[in-house]
Image (cartoon, rainbow, N blue to C red; front, side):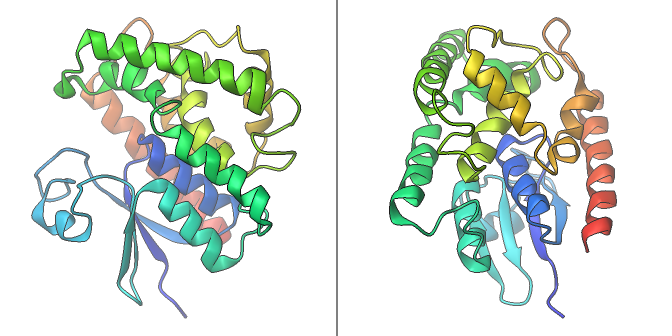
Length: 250
């Protein structure tokens, strides 16, 4: 029997959550190994042992113990797993349908991804010292992206690329969903009714609650920024919830 895939990262990481969610949704067993982003310690993403696996020092990274194949970057990981396992429901085999998913995945990086840069990371990662001008620019970029999703991507379909959930939705939700009042509560999403409707639909997708345990534990950070102890405890509790869920599907 093959050893389960290893996922390196922390539950609080948005790209890590996207990969986690996909694997839980498809009932693919995996083991999560905690990697502290930015740290040079034994379990840090800047430790030489981790950099030997992922020279960029980013999370997530996956490793297949039996083949020693290693791959970084959430979108590359999700596409690889879908290709390997034939998950054509979330990554269609039809060329045009797949191209629309790829379109969003490429669009995501300097658009929707700025939700974290402009709104969440400054409250969580003080060590990054993100300049105020960068935060404001990121928030403006996010607003433009939400307008594009609301008036375009989600104007006529239930999900981003059609009426079935795909990799695009997992990638987008972990960024936009974290901003909701039920989680960090750091951005007003009410001007985007189609986005709000899509968020509600995504909350019904299998695996949502487990993957977002870390945000439920963290709570509202719009007024009081969380302490490092609060963040660590949220990650630990999220890992416990994940292990219970993995025990169900393995």
